[in-house]
Image (cartoon, rainbow, N blue to C red):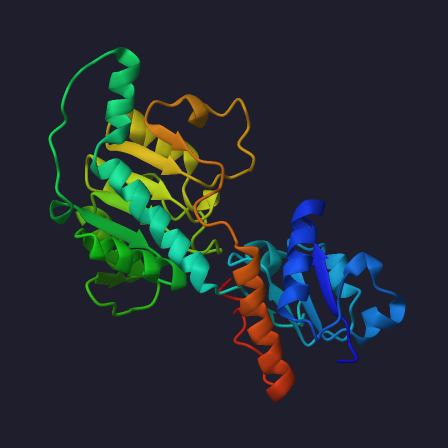
Amino acid sequence: MSDTIALISNISADQESRYLSALVAAMPDEKIATFRTMNEAQRVQARIAIVANPDPADVAALPNLAWVQSLWAGVEQLVTAWPSGGPPIVRLVDREMSRTMAEAVLAWTYYLQRDMPAYARQQRAGVWRQQAYRKPSALTVGILGLGALGAAAAARVAQAGFKVAGWSRSAKLLPGVNTFSNDDGLTEMLRISDIVVCLVPLTAQTRGLLHAGRLAAIKPGAALINFARGPVVVTDDLLNSLDSGHLTHAVLDVFDEEPLAPDSRLWRHPQVTVLPHISAPTDFETAAAVIAENIAAYRETGVLPCGVEIARGY
């Protein structure tokens, strides 16, 4: 191919190097170069850019882009900074990431179902006490967001014997899942859920989705898992809900700012489990394979992959 594919990133040098190696291995017939190493002619000719948290100015310096492929499933940072009339964005839809996320959701659902936070507190206090066992079929896991990640998680949790409810902006039907949509449906799903799992994309509509009023709508004694984005949950409102005893525990893998500040109250709260954004890391090789498929199809047909709806944010 005559045009060079640009890799534009604002990530660590090690991560960028690993991505570049995986992409080159997956597309041996393509020319791929980091943006900073491309000459002016290559930048003008580039039709495709692969990006990870890019500087918008770097993207704008490629005037003839047909489309932009994100290396990440989440595209909120891209969408927020995207210029009007900018090239279409294609987010990463990786089956391996869906499997990894479903695995993580099930693991931490078991953590809550088997009262691991209570046993950890008892160990620190030297207390020997058996908590009452709750079988999976007695608990409802409510999943916010039924896209690729949410649907995979819902299926995996249902296979493990839990009752599963799911909410999405638009109505969906999933086998074995009690599905809800719109604002009334959200309130109803929260009301019946023993464990609420956040997997929605961060958009203007989902920022602050779980505020004090909606947290109060969750079934008393329930727990929360946030594997979406930090701003989906209003942190102060969550802490108030935990302090009041309305919610019993929160497993948080995402935060308003990352890394989480050392002085954040979340680190020391006895009813919070803090994770360093590890629920579903991107697999370099499988991500590169998915991107290679997208680019090969475009080269063959000239048809752009299905892109992000900028107005919706995903």
